[in-house]
Length: 221
Image 1 (cartoon, rainbow, N blue to C red):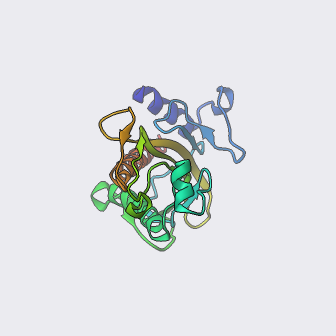
Image 2 (cartoon, rainbow, N blue to C red):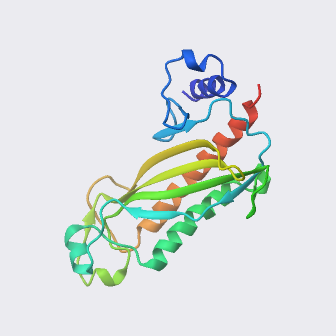
Image 3 (cartoon, rainbow, N blue to C red):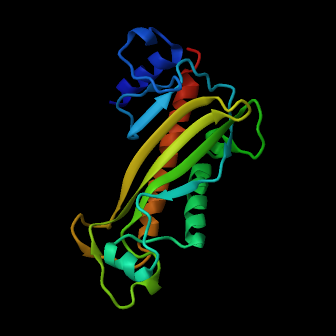
């Protein structure tokens, strides 16, 4: 499957008969990548990423799938919890930190702050966030919560030229933070989901690095 995906990406990037193939186009001219590791991935035909070796990481925005109730009691009753502003900022920073770790200098990339001809702009968002276990110990108050999953979140990602803001690629992927060790209902302690979310961020970041490297390698061939 990986070889098939790479061949399809080559066909799209070099533009060989893209118009004659049965491909799906986005509203802004991106081509959908079949059998992507992520749920959906779109790429600009004929894109050449060889000039780029730096990345700007935009602040990560976060939005909920369903707005959590205003009170802790209501959140517990409905199993729909909210992050504090500090926790939300930590989640936002955590995703960009994971991307920065994957796109390190030893992997041929550099994280910068200023736009330039060799700089890509990466805008990541966390959307449809749903937290099903209390992130704060004070929300429990002696109650016991059992769940098979700690929640879900979706990555929405865009990659653009940092100067022109031309869109090169777009991707989205939903992941569930499952309770470690079982897919059955288990008691969940407050805050236990942090480790699972970090694993999801690391997995997303590694996919981003690998795919950008692959596109760079085959650009212009």
